[in-house]
Image (cartoon, rainbow, N blue to C red; front, side, top):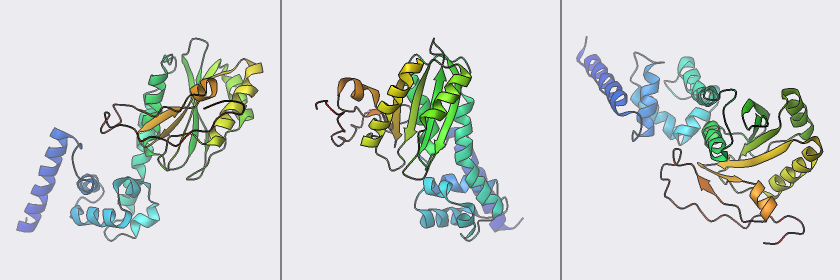
Length: 261
């Protein structure tokens, strides 16, 4: 083995040991990419490739969200490496879903919010989901109702009613994300939620919460509809890098017709 190859092998061994002992917390983005690329490019110096990826796309998240054809255009990134990087967000979603167990108790809305925070962590398109619950607030099923573009998603009341009827659900917890990073609900979000509540009421199907998730924070639309309260932006401590960091003051929320601020 040449001196260069020995140095290369030694560098890989040291990084793997560091990651095994300390985890990925605190490692720079390019080092995390370098480690991942070890497994797709076993005989290549992946440090330079990792730097090229960060320079091209700007952040670790954008690397993972990039199209495989865009990734392949970066010198040194082949098909295997592009597919590995593309699988990371999908694996994150599957990991979150694997923690859901039929019959799990979701009487705590914070537990539901915690799940959705994990689920939406890697989502770049606005996606509408629901937890369907029985009359004891135990999980019947998780449903992905719609996946839209970067900034829009459709909530179809008829589709939700059909699924809830088929699953014999008594209530549901809705959620969708705002990929742009602001968890404050839009006027359309509030109007849609109110419309769903009105449509479900004669069917004895209740919405327990409608979370809007973005950038490590969430809000629930229902308290504002019921109480005309200002939206409260919350952190989930396990997901927030700095849970004591104060949430930014959101813009004044929309007010229901006939309501008051």
